[in-house]
Length: 271
Image (tube, rainbow, N blue to C red; front, side, top):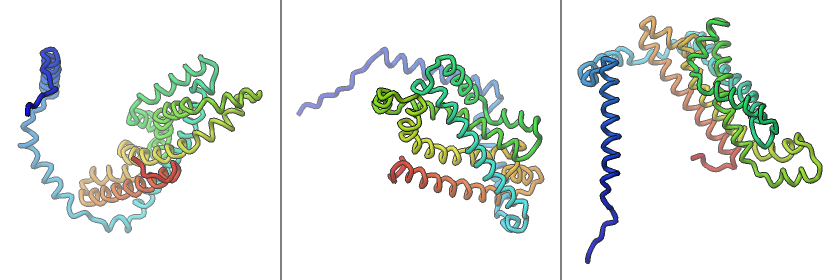
């Protein structure tokens, strides 16, 4: 039996791949030279990481229930994420209706709102927290304001796409009866989009929990700030206990978010 192969050698394709590989190799080498990075350090200097890990184990868990500030820090982190998601998600929803083509007929308004959402989306959260810390001081309030802006930027565009992807036929039918635009939004668009909006807000809360912990290291308060203080004071075993606590907090929040989102989206398993 004769076996035929469908693969054909293409010199052009081979040259393109070789060129891309060569360019990537040059860029990687140039970046290593520019940063003064020696890849062999991953093997020769890694023992410092192992030594630090040995100093962090076993973790000291007793401060978690003896120190009341730890419990307050956890509440601060959860509150920052909740308020940032609630306020930021609400503002993102309003801006999404102003940016969607099927809900806002004025092109100038749509372009302006889309520009605002794009601007907020490209600013890193760490830049925002530094500005708010300088403006309102250290603490969870600066972290909450940062999460508000990051939520608006991240989910404003997503909500806009959800609105624009709604079925147009029911809206045309209601428009044909003489309904106003706000009535179409109320009776056609909102029923189609509300479950998706709510499910994505749970997802936003899941993301904001992780972000809030990171923001605490930069002065945003919460459990992240406690972790930063423990590392700065060389209390490594206390820091490891806080790391274990944050991992548990993130896992529980993620599982709760997945269950609630699955129920809102029809009870199926999330993929």
